[in-house]
Length: 189
Ligand SMILES: CC(C)(COP(=O)(O)OP(=O)(O)OC[C@H]1O[C@@H](n2cnc3c(N)ncnc32)[C@H](O)[C@@H]1OP(=O)(O)O)[C@@H](O)C(=O)NCCC(=O)NCCS
Image (cartoon, rainbow, N blue to C red; front, side):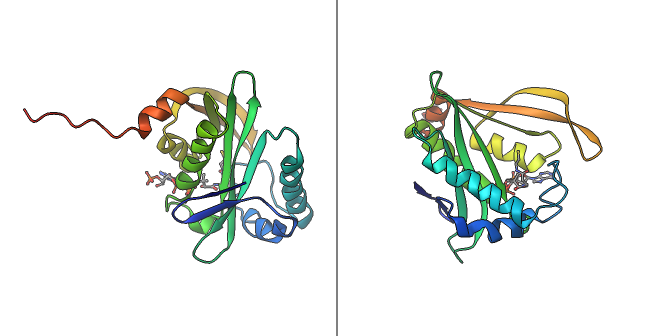
């Protein structure tokens, strides 16, 4: 599977990707909202192996793709969609990016493409995600993709010494399609 945006290639992981994954996951800033306190080579290998295993599943339900910057072919993160309920046609998305690249709209670009794939190719009805409420960048990505906040799970998880709220977001297929239509021009008064 392969997708593309203006600045990114979204491609399948390969075994040799683990050092590039380790490079961004070893960053404490990246780890801020995760339980993990440090990433190791073994951890990064296992992480990549999980996606290789998902590629082989039949039928495949999880599509977690490596993000490669077109300008220099560097692997700088991942973004993917996972079908969690095929009968109800429901899936969720998840993503991560190397911290020096945050705030440039890159994950909004990737996540928009993944949601497009979910509705147009996987024929999903509802695509959702969640994030730690304090992870403002992630909540912004979900909102910019067109998702609506559906809930807040208060003090859901104890992470690195603090109880963290979770925010739930989702978008429905008809909401997505409405966003794709160009706005109808209003006649001049
Ligand atoms: C979450 C993450 C993927 C966002 O990626 P990104 O490429 O920086 O996202 P974008 O640039 O597309 O959008 C981020 C938005 O949040 C805003 N933002 C980020 N941090 C912010 C902060 N502390 N306060 C206010 N706004 C903030 C940015 O300004 C931008 O909004 P804008 O386009 O309206 O200006 C990235 O921070 C990351 O990988 N974090 C670590 C892993 C992670 O948390 N993954 C998600 C788990 S749910």
